[in-house]
Length: 420
Image (cartoon, rainbow, N blue to C red; front, side, top):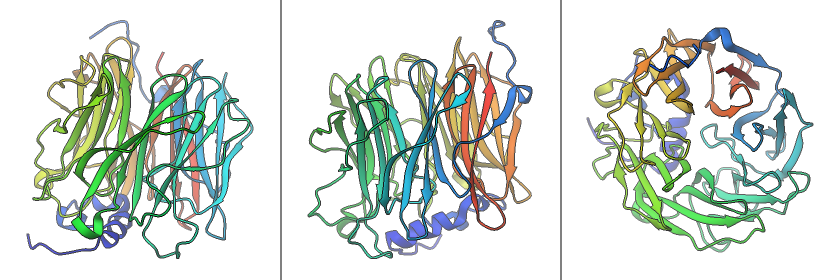
């Protein structure tokens, strides 16, 4: 393969423009651009779409679990002037709360792979995080800043936004693709991809910071000096400590999934969870996802070595210290963008996208006993499906995604998959 030099912005623009259509015919050259019987059967009969509280035109939805089996749905509502409103709604007892605004009037990132989120530290303490362009920057500029806001009254009121990823005076390139995990009822850890050294070293780094519900923050920690440029990250807290997953990078452009653990407050060195040896000249915009019940942990990811796209799932029984050999989840035309939700006992449901003659299919599959795969089933299909996000909810799993119609109008969609 002939190597071509790109700016990072060109890589990101090319990767984002590919969307789901990069899969079939799936060419990596084209991608170069940025038996427990107590478990009931989980299938399409338990699936139903719900009315979403987000209005037509909304983008980048994400769901996160909260106490008492409730779920937070967040999204962006773009405005004609280039700004947007970051809003959320709480689903409890089968109903949505009235949408509330976290922040507005900012130039939020509209990257579908970098959805903003809301993390519940407790029933009252919430932390919201998002990426946005600096207010002083020209529309074509590259810098992206990571911000957070906090609430100590369950989301009724929110603090002013606080810059997380760097100081105001520093220059920077693209930053974002953040993930968050609660440490306790007042503290959380954020991780993100940081491109401030791109111009000098052509490298993107993984960084982290501990933040508090009162807005205080620790110093920034460097976790990995060389990562893939624009794949989303994942972060969970196991019984052993924090576990982060992301797409790594080598000087030879091998982009396999890496893990880092934080045990007793100390971050480990990065390690590749499974050597796929995926060589690709630019970011595939297809990050991993994690879920945990404390000890048992599931990791799902997309890879395509030798132009063979696949979605892989691996389980850990020791908080992420080791993982079993991965299971192949897809049916042969994977697009990725995968999610996993653990269930008890020793069960999980996975979600991902596949291609069928130019149409994206949103699929689900029940995995029993970490090894037995039930038949996959389709939840939705469309020509321009974004990045799904899933979370446990009362009575099942809540799944959200955005889809654009033929007029490029975005709609947030939400569905509930019954698991009991």
